[in-house]
Image 1 (cartoon, rainbow, N blue to C red):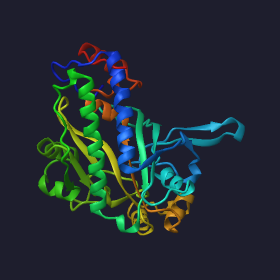
Image 2 (image 1 turned 180 degrees about the vertical axis):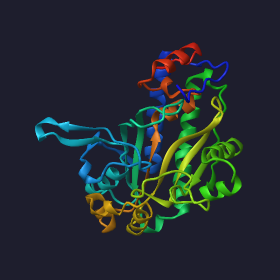
Image 3 (image 1 turned 60 degrees about the horizontal axis):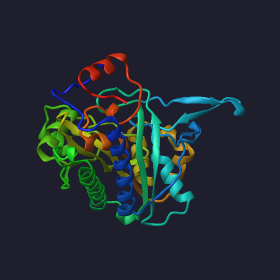
Length: 338
């Protein structure tokens, strides 16, 4: 409730029933377009993993995964995935994907330490995708080309949704043109603002933005945001940001990047003080060069629906748990939480 924003004069343009139809439309259409543009095959993925495998995602490095004991395995612990960033790369090798081929899957997670607000829930639903690339593809030009493909799929989905629901046509369309900027350039441009304030200022002016190079310390001595050291290459990653007009803020739809090479993982583990991970199976495989070079990311399903439907709270497009005060405040303001 503490971080809840209630915009003035808000009303949902769709009924609850039409909202469900729109959510299905967005998800079906977007994943169809994205899979064709990036040459991705839909696969099944795990809901939980063995903690000892090193396969789970540490995200910003402080989130606690949800774990449970398995009765028939002497209470052996399993962890609910926080993302599938590492599993996907391993799967690409095990399943025999070739260069230029990739996979995508539904990733559902519980993030118990999430700070809840209009954009964040403890329930995460996203498309996780990963694609095999060549060594020579590990560059900014290739990264930018993939970002543009994702944005193209978002805009095509938006146009299709507006054709189905004319009442959404009053919402501003999101620009297919992407502005690229690094976190250091952003800090140089707005040295007196916080990282989130910098994003808001820049995206409000420029629209669709890909913010690059997240994880390493900037000239100020602090990173723009935290990133685990063992999946993205901090020099070849970023966040895809849109302007959320109803909430008047920058809106992260996707975190993605070219994945670590043996050299960049070696460097980043030491920078992050995580050298103890070198003995884990996944990390040993990357450091030994046994896994393919890849690019990948996560794209929020509820976040995409929220963005394209003009919703002001993620609870309008996904069923989750909210405290009583949040539900009462949203109901009073005409914000229908599922």
